[in-house]
Amino acid sequence: MNGQYCQELILHNCLIFQRVIAFLFYEVIKNVLIKWHRFIIISLMVSIFCIAQAATLSLQQARDLSLKNNHSFKSAELMKKSAEQKSKASFTHFLPSFNLGGTYMQKGDVYKVETDLIKLPVYQYNPTTGTASAIAGQFVPLQLDMEIDDEDAFVFSVNMTQPIFTGGKVLNQYKLHKNLEAIESQKMQLTEEEIIIKTDEAYWRVVALVEKVKLAEQFKTTVQKHLEDLENYKAVGIITQNEILKASVKLNEAELNLLKAKNGLALSKMALNQILGTPLNQDLDLSDQLTASNQKNAGQTSIEEALQRRPELQMLKSATEIAGNNKSIQFSRYLPNIMLNASYNFMNPNPYNSLKDETGKDWTIALIASMELFHWNERGYSLSSAKNLEKAALLKYDETRELLTLEMKQSDNMLNESIQKVMLTKTGVDQATENLKYCNDKFSQGMLKSADVLDAQTLWQKAQSDYLDALSELKVNEIKHAKVYGQLL
Image (cartoon, rainbow, N blue to C red):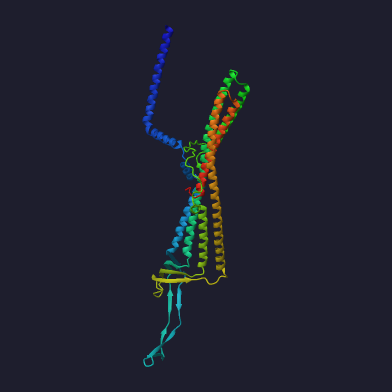
């Protein structure tokens, strides 16, 4: 009784101690929550948001993330903006330009103007004859003595120049820059398409390997269960040790294949993270799954329409137009340039009032024409060079057009082959599944050997793996086909 009483007393004291500790812990937590409740709530909300954001990653989200973090795409985007600004700068050449000029001068000496005494004759008009004749002995004396002692002198002017005719030079320069802008835009599109294809390939590779890891785990479980059944049969003397050894070898192979699949999945996730611009060790949970739905045969899109959407061909078309613009610019050098110039001038000393120390004002409007006459046929050589460049650009355009047409035909074949491959491998999966079921039934009835079941399991696993590879290949070929036909973006 005393021992039981001591145990109850100890238990009672322990319960009291636990309650005291729980109460103190509750008070501490309550004070902390009261003091830092806002910070904790905000932190929890941010954490929950981040976890939710990192939970799944769709294919479109992966594309957006890779484009956002890709340096090549950012560079292409900046080059496009630069070309747009150059086009705007070229357009300003159609508009008048305004300039402010001035000269300030301080003299160290005095300007002097002195002339000798000049006798100007006096003329008399004869109304009869309508002529004037000098009167003998009469003259008017004239002597000029003048000093300009202003130490400070200045000339300021405001000028406006408006091109009127330049032989098409300004217009073709503007067209040239617009074509350069179009090229940079097509380069940006081409870079975006390449990034998307690279992202899609890595994305579907990870999705396929996730499924292969599941398949390897399922195959290992199946072989392991079969091995357990064999061990039970061995215990009752139905089979020999040799059958168990064969199944053990197959189980080792399944474990090795599972390890390879997991390692491949880890490396593929790191490769995808590198493309996305995220930490290499960040775990990824991809939401899109491999499916074989909505399959359509290739070759249903017009090649002519597809060629007009290809950025490579559009870039060469713009390059051809640039060569034509350059040819027109070189030809414009044979034509005159006509400009309208207007200016308003301020000057001191005033030349309009005997060079007095005061500010004079004046304005002028002028038409200015200039034309190059002769420079050892330099214009002719430049024009001939521009014509040759235009012909070369046209030849390059035609060649690329033919190559892109061949690429489309090749893409059609690859997509159709992928569709057929998916259908055949799906049939193979159905057949391998039925064969495995048949072998398991016959083995349980004692009509087949264990080796036949292991072979059937291996064929089933290979059929499933081939089907996953075919689906992944189909996804990649679909996106490449869309890119080849200009339908990716």
